Image (spheres, rainbow, N blue to C red):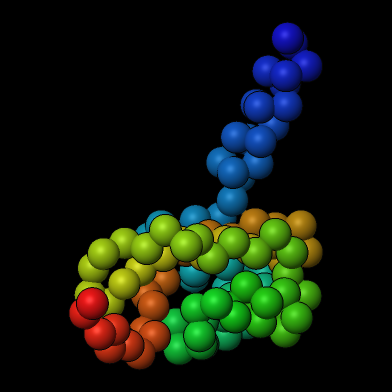
Length: 110
């Protein structure tokens, strides 16, 4: 039982150690502390909303050599829609809520 508790604690600790870019001053701190990651994060955050939602994770993995990319399929029903994006660059986990500016599709009523 103790090993199971330890594993669960490590999973939640890893999520807690993510840099939440929604926090005030987080992006400015990143620019100061790690300019290389800042450049990548800025490009990801500026381009991801305009890419097809289904290809965002693959694009981040290939373009920026990121791992553990998660573009949640759970969308916030705001206008525009929003989702939480998280990814790992060189062992550092980043997380941010982004908007989804995907074009609307007309779906005929049945």
